[in-house]
Length: 400
Image (cartoon, one colour):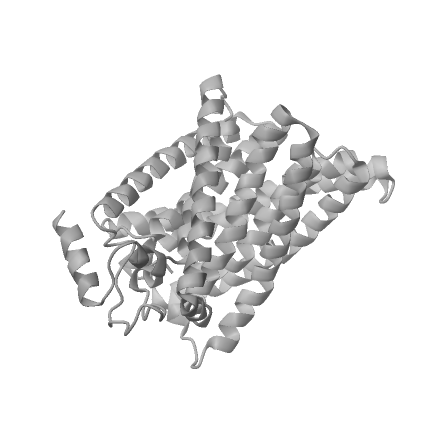
């Protein structure tokens, strides 16, 4: 509790104490919590060796994720009302603005679970609700993918050294990859074939925006690693981020091909054989992306082993989701090929992600109970009055 007391003293000195402190220093990086929780819910629901209790556990985690997402949206709105200059500060700091894309990603994980759980139980109206939410998710994801990289270009007042490039640069485009996967899942349950066709085609467009862009960014990141070696310890968990767009891209292209194989012949918009081609191409391309992932997975695990000790911060939530996407792609490959190898890999990875999620939840709750010293850090310089935005987001910067 000593850390919590010291935290309170620090905020007293800077004029910040009570619930307003948490509102003021809330950042978009908190939505990585709902990203990680959302992928855990999907993994529990789609576990290869399924059981009834896993289904209900996935429902519990799903409800928790909805509650957290609603809470974070409420806090963000409250922050905008009470401290409007905070949002100006976020926009002026690209490393913080990148985390805005975690909002549509989180929404995408919620829509996915609506398709898995709510649609079979409650019927057609949930399907169309999920379709409407997906439209909003796709629009937000595309906005982040197009606007946030441009923001990085125009907001830099000086040249950006290659040594400052991190895997976080892929965050703006991850949302479009997740939205493409959600498009496939929603299209698979839409009763109208024409609506399903439009959804699938948009899903392919979103995939085309996200996955190639992520690969180009990873090329730059690889150059940064080979020239400037590993990132600092505070940023070390960002090494897992490349797994996200690659594995979610593999998952999405398989699901899109699966729906295209059914929808294309029924609508007669595209040649009937195009559906089979899209499906087979999707499976082969997902194998290639899965293989490409092995390089980044080995690099990330070896980096963690090399560093051994690194501090807890919000970045720990940043690698829960990427590892979860590895499990999703492995489980889907096991289903489509089918393959016992991928089935075992997907199951083991799913269990590891769930245990990691429990560990990060415990560390997060422990820090919040002791005053939020690591997750809600006071600015390094005192902010003159409570209407001004935070002067410096130390911990948020570390997770980049």
